Amino acid sequence: MPPTSWELQTINAWKFPGGLANPGEDIGDTAVREVFEETGIKSEFKSILSIRQQHQHPGAFGKSDMYIICRLQPSSFTISFCQQECLKCEWMDLDELARTEHTTPITSNIARLLRYGYQEGFDKIDITMRELPAVYTGLFYKLYHRELPESYRNIT
Image (cartoon, rainbow, N blue to C red; front, side, top):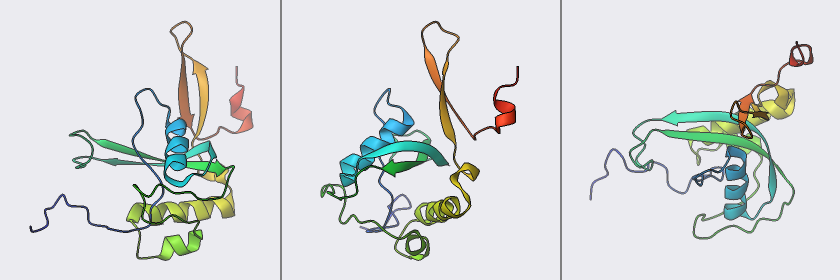
């Protein structure tokens, strides 16, 4: 069968763990769960690094797709990967990941973004989360944004 325009273009490429959110699941909780399910690595959500928006994504059930890339802090380091989802799983040097031809464009771009964060400080790239009370009694929402300078945090 000839390839179609919707066919997956990259096979056996290095990529970061990922997957779909469960209904009602927060962004950070999804990232932590998916990393654990695919790699066996326990981690903590730190920030959002980037958001990819794509329309007509063939795996998005006819909807536009938002792919949210999170920065996590690992609390375990021994890999026990899911063989149903991954062919191979390993820790990689970010310089190598940014340069390899065996990855997706989003993976190499995020590797460069992470290198920048390590070198210049994640405060320059992190989109962090604060939980705030909603206008509806007893409800809360999560607000994601770049951290404000101290002088702007408590203006009354």
